[in-house]
Image (cartoon, each protein chain N blue to C red):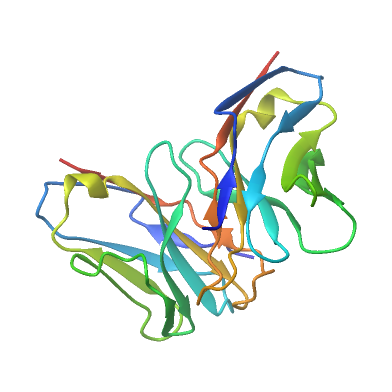
Length: 115
Length: 115
């Protein structure tokens, strides 16, 4: 079965420090990978996606993610965290071999940035 | 560009009652998705439409859930009768086509509480 794992329920980081939110995946074939962020009482906002090409993908709000095929990972990173980055982050993958193109999500990681 | 609109934002009902949610996708987007997000979990697909046709409804509990997109634009998701385990946030998303690489844009969601 195709799946996404986010091994950390919560990540805590001080403002100004680099942050990493981890994601690993299990899919057949070449994956299409996405990161979304969710603020309280709001829908998911798109951050970035990996389709093909350069393994380092840059997205919104200074976030980037690195695709690593050998480790089947797609970790989200930011060089300098802001308090306003505190939110719930979801990694997702597009499945293969199914009728539709709906995303399969991980369970989410809460990022807490302290001042 | 206006985003995905959903209403109502919040709904509280008794078990065995019925409820309906409405979604208006981004203008011109052919593909529409309904996801269910239970507290502490990532969103899970309920149904995917391409224009007014169903692409994937394999995870829709068809004994109680129904959805339609009659004119290929707005969509309605209905639950009848509701159960306690239906308490969740219902997210609508749209994308311009049904391609696996397309970004899905999410609405703010409808938070359903079943008492």
